[in-house]
Image (tube, rainbow, N blue to C red; front, side, top):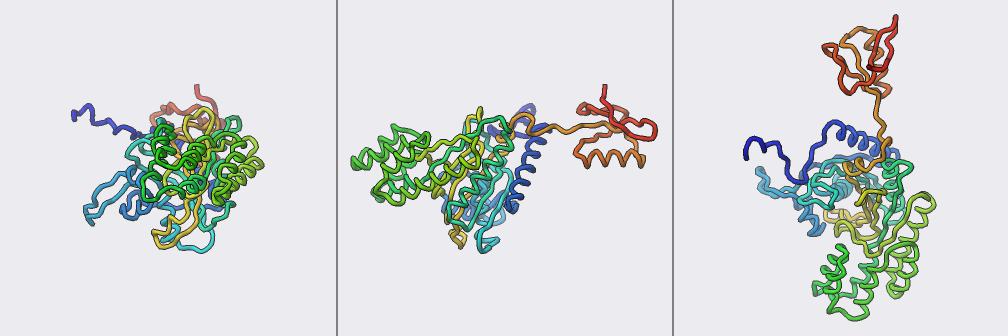
Length: 390
């Protein structure tokens, strides 16, 4: 590589310059503080783990997404985390081992082998929250409530938010009727996940006519709340699927009460995310952004591979994407004030007061004001006062 190309970054890998880095960090602090106010405890999982811990039992899709390499010390394979949710599950099951309900939150860099959407890079900063130890739908409701609270902080009061909700239980109930010795189930899942009707038709070509018709009908179960009565008719003979539909109804009713401004879109063929999801799946969208800004779902028993099966539900967002989508004014700029490069007691006292009040104070070395400054500290009589620069 020639010297003039050494500064290039790999495709999908970016760096955050001061303004964007400050906005992302401000968003991170605000959202983690909100999680703490809800009782979620902060953890910092490692950036790299052995792949037999990082990926075990989590499906081929996460395996493909994870960048892997050999550890020179142990000879074992290491993986750079592509998703922090399994790490949080390991911490709950193995490192903490607490009884009862555990709430964890986290934030950190991840790495993807390929971008996951047209607006995403390969190095998201993931922030998420998880609830362990509660199988009741109330845990899902709390998780969705928190997710919407965080997204609302980013979006501001005037931006429309949509909650997209589904349940893999409807698909799984139909899946039980497939011949488990064939590859039909995997092909159907892949086609539904990609919303590819031609591939779905190819995958169900050898199935019984009633089952094929049910799977095709599943792709039509999306839209407003009239989806739910149609779903009940479709799965009337499948108790587990009916229970899944009722869980969606419970969430929809609760969100309507708690977040009346949030639009709701139901999609019972939605199999978003990784294959470890086992129940409700959900995502939040902000008007004007082409991809979900936060998504999650239930993933019971992932901790079983670490010695303790636990019900679990949670969500995660890409902090960079969420910050970029934030409404103007949500991340209010702070006052930036120039101060003389003097170190007198009275000036120091004034500078400290301004910084404690949230202002940025930058020393004017060589009597030159920093370009970011819009005000300056000037001594008038015995007092230091702020005046506009210019």
